[in-house]
Length: 311
Image 1 (tube, rainbow, N blue to C red):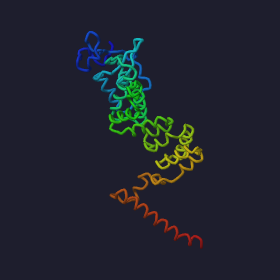
Image 2 (tube, helix red, strand yellow):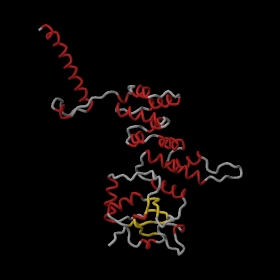
Image 3 (cartoon, rainbow, N blue to C red):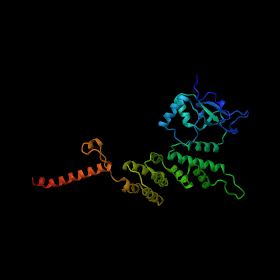
Image 4 (tube, rainbow, N blue to C red):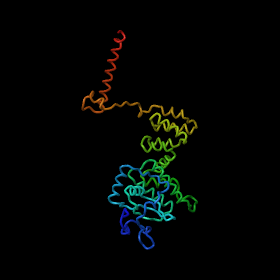
């Protein structure tokens, strides 16, 4: 017997959508659709990660089915395209279901893009790269929607106004939206470091102005030095790039500068030191104790040197 995410979802008529979502008979376009008939949204910027949240979703789907229908739009060949619900679709596949409950809605390309992005931007965790490509896609879709002009021949939707609307929905200014979009100019190796939190957001924005070749050099040097650029270093690299003087040697020179937050640090296994340090000390007190012990050891060695020379 075929598994299904929801039984007869036609019973939910009138609960999930407006008249736009109904067919000519007045019934909502809600149905169980085979997973193999639903393709992913092209250029979908949000990653379906196999993390703890996905594991929990799979377990929930396995026990209770998909409680919230996914949103799809029909394609001309009889198949469907996912608009919102990629994670639920993937969870259904992993859980062994053959179909998923869907709300079918007729949407043009721009409407589908904006709906897809808005639904995913509500996630609790959105990676910088996901947000960057999502904002870029949404601005492009809004621009296409506003191509007509009014009596003064000015575009109804300007780039800044679109960015303002995108930012307003996310609680940020238009300038911040444009900063995120700059991240789409980073090569994948650097963008991954941004997603991993190894390169901070503002330095990443500055680095996005480097050419792909310059970014590739930088990625190699970051791996070699095991250090990422500070904002000040990123600004320097950008200026050298704009002046046409950013070579591999210049990148290495800038990246070799000592930064206050990346001075050399020493670390030891706690088990090796525990027997020598009194219990109950704070972190700062333990550090002070080790420094004093090393200072005492150094003085003792210095006192021994003359004796060793005489012998």
